[in-house]
Length: 486
Ligand code: NAD
Ligand code: 6OD
Image (cartoon, rainbow, N blue to C red; front, side, top):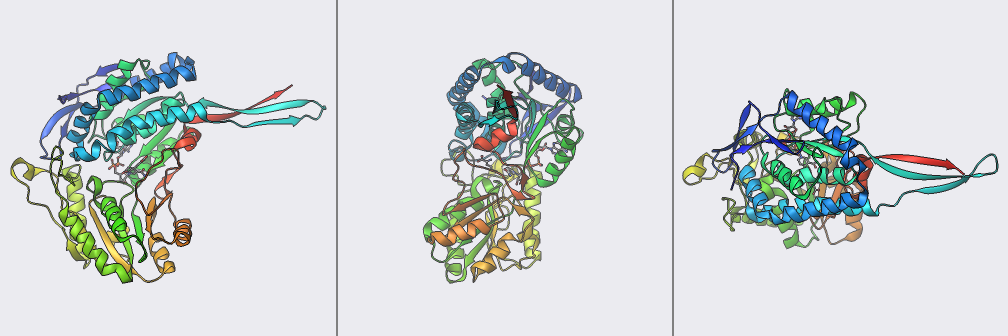
């Protein structure tokens, strides 16, 4: 049963406030709940609870016990899988088929993987000769960084929140999470699970609200928050980076993208089409790693565009419960308006609309939902806004290319540098192109194939820092060298 009141979770208790905002489902834009907005007082209480837990039971707990609790957490998320699924689909409108394969399993896996990483990570050891003819030994020791402020987006709410909370807790930190105002439900539900498995009070806290002059700003500017980890738009990341500079606090920023796919004529054509359709339209195009620019080698350009058009037109737009649904709505009316404004800009810039470009005709109450059609353009010059700016919708521009040098120059000519997908059977070329792409993540003959031990993050304006595997430990722990003169 969906909750109609979504509360903050502070020091192990669900906390209402006297200020509420609406929770809408993008399926119909109907109000389906009310969210208690945290003010300064609630953020203060959450940070104080997190500091107390750090000095108290959580900070004193052995690694073995912490890992045992995180493993229990994984089991309990899986026990309540259907509740998480329902909450995530209500907030986002995404297909159940997608959330049940990606969002919720990853929500659990993010705790398991980082519990394993912290159990197994090796340290450095050096022994040295001392000037007096004796010996000293040096070894590395990892301590938690402290209270981590976690600021989350709405596109993969549980997945992206636990991607940060998992390693943060595994490393012995405590957290205060600010979920997106669009998607508060799964973060709140996770509070129940924390209590059920016996994670001490104050280790995991959730404050709801917006960014400026609300919970987001109160949390990131709070002097007792020791580190900040953020996923969201680049412009927001810049504001958070400035906030983190006060007190010189560590910050990890996972931000926007305008990712290019490069399709060579020798690719496995069907695999390239399947992967590119997924990377353009999965989650209604609301994946930071998604492809909005596709460059296709000229000999297969026409055939590729035709196959993409056929694939996009086959996608069934519909409600989460329908197993045939291939694409849900955008997250909100505001985002729908933004994406539709780019559809208009594409027209004004002279794009050829291969398919889509508008709002699908939906029946009954769905008419008011945040739907857009999967959209493909061709024919734009490289300096078109639609090719340069992140849209974050189900759309892509496809352009032909004639040489490796030409495509590398075009693909790299962007302020963002998050991810790329390269499609070719020539391994040497794949390797050469991947190494020259100015991105943090390069896939060859796949897209969104994730091994959580690998480095994840963006180059250029797509981010600062890397998370994943031991790279998360670099952010969520303070590495200390202990030198003992024997
Ligand atoms: P957003 O930047 O609008 O919001 C993200 C979070 O920041 C929200 O919780 C919001 O309330 C909060 N926020 C906003 N202003 C703030 C402020 N001044 N101080 C503190 N907090 C503030 O992003 P979004 O619209 O939720 O998400 C979509 C964006 O996220 C896209 O740009 C996408 O590319 C990016 N994204 C990046 C990654 C990645 O791993 N690189 C992953 C997912 C999404
Ligand atoms: O898979 C992940 O760990 C991850 N951070 C994915 C990000 C997707 C962006 O929308």
